[in-house]
Amino acid sequence: MKTKLKMTLKEADRYAIMKDVEAGKITLVKASEELKSSYRHTRRIWQRYQREGPEGLISKRRSRPSNHQLDGELREKALNLIRKRYPDYGPTLAAEKLEEKHELKLSKETVRMLMIQEGLWKPKRKKEQKVHARRTRRSCYGELVQLDGSYEYWFEDRAEKCCLLVTVDDATSKIPHMKFCRVETTEDYFRLIEEYIGKHGRPKAYYSDKHGIFRINAKESLRQQTTLGEGLKQLGIELICAHSPQAKGRVERANGILQDRLIKELREEKISSIEEGNRYLEKYRRKYNKKFGKRAASPEDVHRPLLPSQKLEEIFVEKTMRVVSKDLSFSYKNEIYQIESNYKHRLWGKRVEIHERDGEIKSVMLGGKKLKYKKWKERVTPVQQTIDVKELEVLWPTRKRKKPSRHHAWR
Image (cartoon, rainbow, N blue to C red; front, side, top):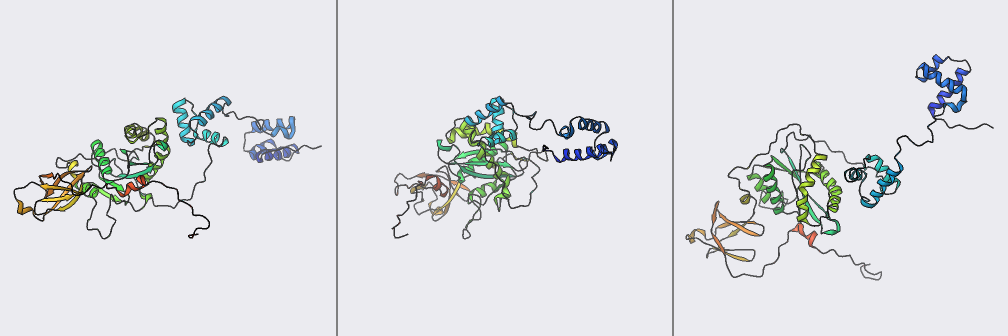
């Protein structure tokens, strides 16, 4: 009874050539040319064919374990650690953690295959994305800095949902500074930029989205710039607003990486509050920049120091206009303020500019000069809490929608 042999295409070609040699149709020299191998190796194949027949042409390594197969003990150790400590990690991050924390050096592809076999990772098909024109990186560090706020449950179920303000340098993809805050507000960007400038100096330009913090979106508005935009203009920093998320892709990609990796790092460090998170961010920022940072085309750092006339505490303030009454008073947030001046008639009906920061009046300005003022003791009406529109998502209670019965009038 004839037995069937399983051969690869290469082995089948060898068998056909050896049969021609056996039949005397071709010589070993001609066979070596057809096999594209040396004469000595062709002779060894021929001798094995003469001894063992067609079975001698089949690879001896078939059905045997690979020489590069992962050791069984090492495999189980890695899988136990992944199951116990990193079940929701991606293969790349899991491989990094195994090497960093447990001194198990495995390639990310090995870890990926192990996790797929154990059902800890599902392969994802890449979605077809709309193609956007590429923009060349800026050549110098500090030439263009991308800004964005990312809302996420950064501390998972250990704290409320909050926002991470991120800056990414366009030339290097490094994160110069980032900061946790409750919500994305103008005052939070004031603090972020103040801290950024304190560390690095003034960049040439910031690149942001079209959020109302950066740009006036209401067509009927009388103002030309937002408070933040005016402040950046005084500092000589250009503000560019992107037309799409893809335009500021570097900060968007950084947000994606942070949402995957930073959340897990905060969990490992047992950090559960914005204050603790902000203290930890500097350490994580250095780690991130070491892994994902690129070398700029030019070694020049184009950040500029503050000029003596540029005082951040006077530039980064919320500005509101009020009209002075005949008794030299004005109202602001349900409080009465009295201007102290000997020139009473000169101030009647004048529009003064209120500079506020962190809920407090920092100064009252008229024609570029500071006016002396004091708060009147009597309160006009009880003060109502003012909530920024961005805070509604965080403060509004989440309620399950009640499903009406089958016999309800709406149905």
